[in-house]
Each structure stands twice: as C-alpha cells, then as structure tokens.
Amino acid sequence: MTKTNRKPANDTTPLVHGGATLPSVVIDDYNNEARDRKGFIGDGANKKSFRDKVDQQRKLLRELARDPFGKVATKELKKKDIDALLCGEDAEAAAMIFGAVEEFSRDFAAVIKKFLNEKSWKKTERIAVGGGFRQRRVGELVIARTMMLLRGDGVEIELVPIAHHPDDAGLIGSVHLMPEWMLKGHDAILAVDIGGTNVRAGVVRFGKDKRSTSKDAAVAASLIWKHAEENPSRTATVAKLSEMLEELVTKAAEAELSLAPLIGIGCPGVIEADGAIVRGGQNLPGGNWESDHFNLPAALVKSIPKINEGETFVMMHNDGVVQGLSQIPLMTDVSSWAILTIGTGLGNAHFTNRSQN
Image 1: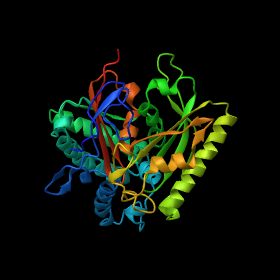
Image 2 (image 1 turned 45 degrees about the vertical axis):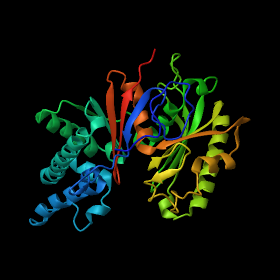
Image 3 (image 1 turned 135 degrees about the vertical axis):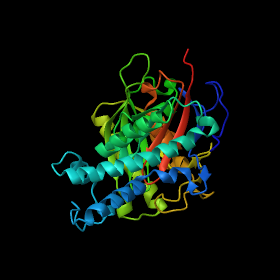
Image 4 (image 1 turned 180 degrees about the vertical axis):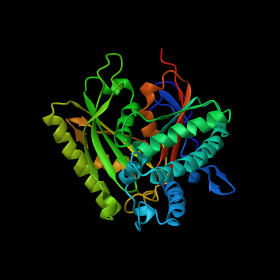
C-alpha cells in the first residue's frame, strides 16, 4: 500500500502536495504496488492485456480465414474499429470482440478481488473505472460485465464508468484539491494532466451550485500536446507546459472568466509533500523527473510567478487520484469508494468521504 504523506487532520492543516486529507475526502491509498507471484496485481488489467485477448480471439477466426482485420497487427487496431464490430452485421466478428470482453472481464474481476483484500480497500462500496479504455463501448461493456461477475461471486460492489470524458476528468479533479475558500470570488482555475504520451492543460470552470463552487465543474477550454511524437527533454517539457498555461490565461480572459491564481496538477507516481516525485515517473518526457534537483511545482511557479496579479499557487497529486476526485459529487451516497484507471497500466486510488457539517 502506498502511504500518503500526512495523517488526516482538520482544515487548518497546511496544504501540501500529495496530501492524504483533502477538503471532501481522505485518501486511504493510491498508486498501490501490491504484488502476487505473477508480478504487480494491476498488470492483469490494462490496455495491453485487452489487446492480447483480442489477438487470442482473432487466431480462432484466422484458422477459418475469417479474421475481419486481415493482416493488420492487433496493436495497430484503432479503438473505433474494434467498437464498430460490436454493432456490425458480421456475427462472428462481434462474437470475437465479445469473447475478448468476457476474458478480460474475468481477469479484471480477479484483479479487483485482490485490491479488495488490501486493508484500506476492504470496505469499498463503489469503484469508478476511468482511463482511456473507459471512453469506448468495449470499455463500458467490460465495466458492466465485471460487476456482474463479481456480484455472481458474492462480491457486493458497484462498478461505474467515470461520469466525465477521461481527458476532462483528469483536469476537473484538480478543483477538489483546493479548499472552497481558495476558489471564492473566482470563476475557474488552471489544471494540468501529465502522462507518458500526452500533456493536457485546461481552464476548469466552477459549477453554479451556490453551496459549492467545486460541484458540477467543467472544462471551459483545453490544449493537448502529444509529446511522445517529439521526445522532448524535461526542460523543454516544462517550457512547453508553461507556454500552454500562458495561452490558457489569455483564453480565460477572452471568455471573461476570473481565474484564481491556482494550478492543479495530476502526475503519475508517488508525490511527496514538497512536490517531489518519489517513484513512478519513469515514463514522463525527458526522464529523470524523480531527481532530487527537480521540482515541477517550483519550476512552474518560477516560470509563471503570477496569474492575474495574484501570486501563483500550485497543488500537485497523483493522476489517478485527480481523475478519481472528479467523481466526488457522485459519491456522496457512499462512504468508502475507489478509482481504477485502465490505461498503459492500472492506476488506482481509494477514498473515504469526510463528513461535511
């Protein structure tokens, strides 16, 4: 279990990066790296393992010379083409995908059972499933089928797809890193989602609920940089990100949105209180993000010292945590819940709701 870097406390506790206590939830666990005899338990459910299931099903049709994808390698298949087979007229092709969904769902259910054996996960009532895999019809079928398999085995838990598009969820969750008092008097904040393939940055506009500025937040504008195509250095990555954020400040002004001088960041890995990445940042652009001589929040504050005359404040947490935080408005009816993000790996975080007086 990954230990968060401070114990639950009251709202007067100083804000820190990667903190355990946030305004609405306590983070019980994240970036869990538990292992079994086969390796990390999360390795049994990711994008690659689903593609492997598709490939196994394709082999059955290749023997009959009926593979609908012909000679295209499974790893090169587009997600929309896989989805299209589900509603097409080719029954064998649809059965091939359904077969992969069934096999992957069984593996996913087994992975979830292992997480639920972890001490901090034992009381879990609901799990939201996110990541890029979720946004496709195949992903939605996997989520539904996995829940049915779990309940059939006596595991009384609910699985739901995250409500927002995964790209938006990774930005919207940043609003919930900040206490309400930091948002008052403003319309939006800047948010960043850093991944091994892309960097996304956006303007997250607050909801209109008079009781809570963080409820019903939405992305008002966003930019994406596919850095994997450029293989930039770490320094170039920070420079590009700063450029993106400056452009978004301009977009917010043009939209007449009052930006709070805040930047929320979701980033892979274990995040220390000072903003250092302890481990898990090996896939980030340019490498060496875990260096003792590098601190992303500090680098951004140096690059963008002020936002609309206010001194810039940066709050960073694990990207799986941030994506999970986007679900907070939909988790008020449960106490203990979690997020699993299916992507290159299986991101994970567990939350307990704080009582709101």
